[in-house]
Image (cartoon, rainbow, N blue to C red; front, side, top):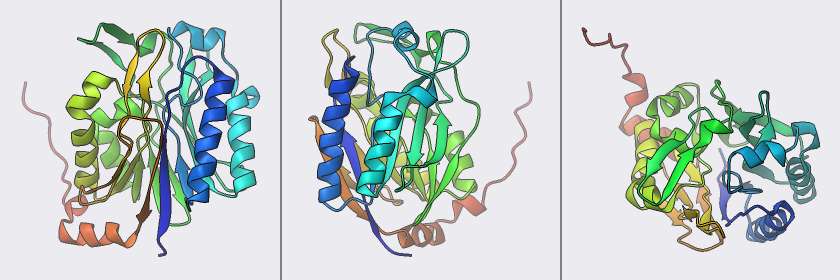
Length: 275
């Protein structure tokens, strides 16, 4: 199986969709000019609102979403695989889905994934996060075929739930995508450790594009978009600023690592502890 180049875009989206899309397009084009075959964008790369309720009020149904149309046009023009990390898509009950899309080089939608685990957390950074107030959770794991292997999809807070990634790996994922808008505080504490753990546990490459920077209303995101190999080695780290990182991925490395530590074959059913 041939090698390929993957890029992770890192941007600082605020609540101006057109400006966000223009910035991302510039970065995607630069990454493709640098040789990227697959380009991955962060969670909510196209729009980050000050309040969760704003996503529905200012939102779109999937078939009318300008960010999805923009992404499909860009993928087709550049003839590249494009992971739209996630965007708010209207759902029932006045909420949105936090939905990611994998786009094929013809602009077609190869896969969709709705974020399963929602970030309802109080952190000592002066902000209270209640994602479930405005977002409807997904309930289905997704693995999608690429020309070089299979890609397991997730979004941000999902990374703290290793059972999801085990399910993806057992379903044949060679690569794991973790687009995120991680908070600066939790990112500094846990981002690298969690992502390396998911790579090591499952013998998978991890592609983790993240948002960076500070919004006018004070929300800080961690950045440090990462590309990690199945042994847990960090191949690329985007640091703190907008831009992108790119690395060459050899799918044969997945089989090599899994031969050395065949833990996927050693999973055993475990009875729950006695009450």
